Image 1 (cartoon, rainbow, N blue to C red):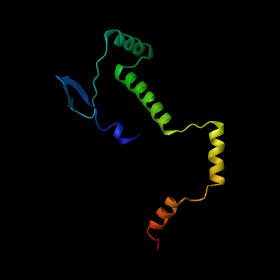
Image 2 (tube, helix red, strand yellow; image 1 turned 180 degrees about the horizontal axis):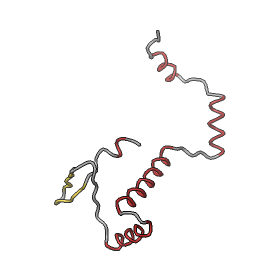
Image 3 (spheres, rainbow, N blue to C red; image 1 turned 180 degrees about the vertical axis):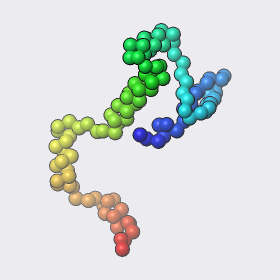
Length: 109
């Protein structure tokens, strides 16, 4: 898991026009929730025979991993996939900028 996801849990409180960030502890996270939403969560918790923390954490992590996976994977259409394969097999000749960049690289020993 990416370390930056677990570095800090921030609570943001509005005070006037400026936001104040409060970092209390890296192991806790708080959130505001409407009573109706909490009742739904509590019902689901009782149906799964677990506790609220485990239930919310399990499902929030599953959703977070899905978002990360979707962001990390590029999905190409068949046409675009064929275009990429064609460019890999038949690359265009290097342009002047690429040649200049290659010449500017330090020589390997």
